[in-house]
Length: 163
Image (cartoon, rainbow, N blue to C red; front, side):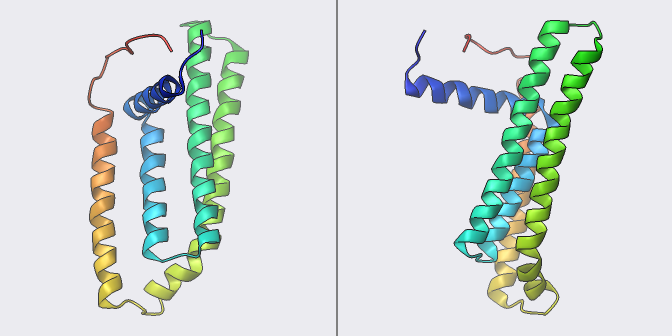
């Protein structure tokens, strides 16, 4: 059965919503991603540097979602039974997330270290920058609270129709 483009986006949104509700690591990665993007805006990074950060962040989120999907498929297939290949598949998928996260962390350090040092260590913190920092801290706190509460809502609720 073919779906409209709008339906495809709706299914994808439903999957993202389900992942945010059930997967703690997704919520952590999304909170970190928001922090990185807000930091890039705050530091007024060059577009190429900001693009590197966005690519790294989206790579980690895509790997995390693929890992979650693979785990669901393995669980569907093996149920409560244990099978060494099922464990290996889950371990390999988790390793992919680990590698993507490690690469993203290295990119983040390479891109953000110098601008952060200029602001924090070298004392280039003026009133405007301090105000931005305060707003970013408040926004990050709100994002973290929203992410944490997303997993608490609708516990046990199943998806409506099949996608």
